Amino acid sequence: MSQLVDKLADLTDLRDRGALDLALVSAIHDLLQPQTAAICRVVGEAGNERWLTTAQIKADQRVPVFDSAWSDLLALPRLAEYPLRQQAGVGKLVMQSRLYPGITVFPVSSSPGTIGVLEIATQEPLSEELSRLVSGVLRLYLNFQSLLDYGERDALTELLNRKTFDGAFLKATLAQQVAVDGAPDKRRDTSCSGSFWLAMIDIDHFKHVNDNFGHLIGDEVLLLLARLMRVSFRFHDQLYRFGGEEFVVLMRCNGEAEAAAALERLRTNTENYLFPQVGSITISIGFSEIKTGDTPSGAFERADKAVYYAKEHGRNQVCSHAALVASGVLVEQAANVGDMELF
Image (spheres, rainbow, N blue to C red):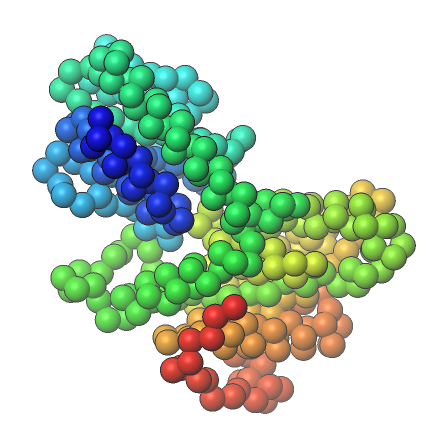
């Protein structure tokens, strides 16, 4: 019992969602000694859903492993390849299947519309007592995950909020450095490629929406734009609302053209969407590549200059900071790489 209490204390001491998943499978590994314990989540658009493994540990492993958050969607296993996970994902505990003896799958989704499972493989089916033990641990895990959601999500749009950005930015710069230098064992992660890009999105004439239609309609516009962002970007692109009408995207792309195409897709989707009572609105977007040794303030400054240029020169367009510098419209300033200026 004391071991269980210690494991639960370790879980609730974490503030990072990825670390929480890793801690959960480690706790299950220590408690049950299974062949495999894994947390898997469904990603991708309808019709092309895939399984992303956020944490997995096998009997002969001491440290859990996981798929990169920036994995290539097509490299991940399809949803239909794991029918037991599908059943559990809709809230049904799956045990003692004839086709999959020893596989027990528990739902771990805390948000409506999402599918996530804890899959445990053992030589013998879990007893009812052990199943109740795992279910109890999962209730605590899900409650704590809900608290993380409350602190990390914008209350209106449910996009990530500003205070979560610094950690994500640091992970992106570290991942980019590893991609350049190679991992410590000299093997590169080939599941994802490219460099990281930061984009700032601003709604054109949003003040007019609030003035003419009221703040409730203005909030509806923000909510609907957030939904357009979700359908316009890939599962691993990180979407933020920083406040007001300011949105931010952190994404990994193979070059400026790919980043620009993704942002142009959002601009077009927004322009073509009819917002209730308001009608059409447009957005201006500025973006910049995140450089090795970059700081959040440095990347934001470049993207902000690009979005400011877009708004001052017609709005409803996507502007690259690098392209503006290359054309002589903007002058690039020397970066203070040594100063880690966080928000």
